[in-house]
Image 1 (cartoon, one colour):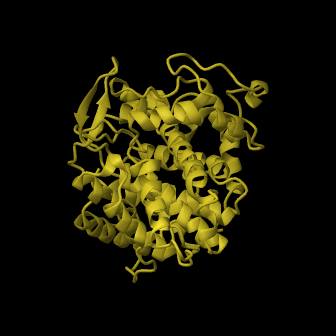
Image 2 (cartoon, rainbow, N blue to C red; image 1 turned 60 degrees about the vertical axis):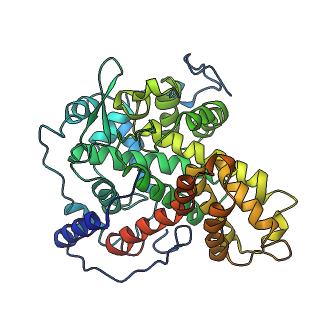
Image 3 (cartoon, helix red, strand yellow; image 1 turned 90 degrees about the vertical axis):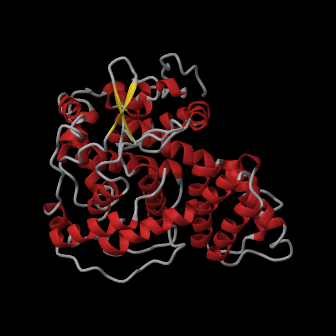
Length: 426
């Protein structure tokens, strides 16, 4: 999907600055700073069958209808509050007034908010001041990616068919569901995607995932492209198949082994109790429907796919005896390069990133070492044009893949310099 127009960003920023009382500042990040900011950081199974439990579920001993709000409240200890103005920003959040063209999610949201499920609690719960990603940044993402008149959205009928729809109304309930879902999923998945890393590095990974989703869907639960890529992470059939086959069991084990009961609850409700997302295009509603656990399910799949990409990159490049000695970077800059290739691979596929990366290492870096992370990332953009993987050889795909990461970075910088106080991360 194409990114939002600069005009939409400017109009939105003027509105937000008037509401919150900010002044537009000068840029604080250069083009390739997506993975480098330190500002404000504090088994396979048959997918057509109900998966059987693979471990003794932590929540088997927990009353499922009890203390959901207490579990959500535990998030307050999971991130630092480094945003003195966040309370003021929250108080000044503005929501859309719904009309008959865009209110089609409101009835479903009202139904979702009832009951004792985690999804219900996420819809009802107030927005935390110290969310990992600042709520104002999330609000801008939802407004600026698509215009209100965009019809890049699908509405699901009871029989599973979809129909074209306008951008859904960004009501308070809708925003709370999206913002709280990403906060919970990110809090629970950051250790899965970056095990053993520092809190700072893990939050930079969350920031990268936020930036990716921002460009892919603008955080709209029912965004769908003409090719069928759908939902928050704009998932395609091959990506869903990959997650179902290679990642779901590991996610369940990691979440249900967590000391945080909220993470166990996340697995119990969205991975154990529900059928996995079916990859076929005819099951498009699996990717976008609230009744199928979205946006939470799609967000979990997004992190899962990126985890798989990181494993592939380590195997093919960073742990490969032919290439690992070529990198002479600090731990911080090494993670910056890995993060860039991870995000890039969401568009190109793993082979679409490691093919030009290995060519770059075998040519330009044949007799030298990588000592500058930004230079390597800039060169990757050129090598995706010159030496693409076989699936990306068309002129259109060369252009799209080479510009994918720079476009994500630019969009993030535009948001952060105007709405994040230096960073969108708390």
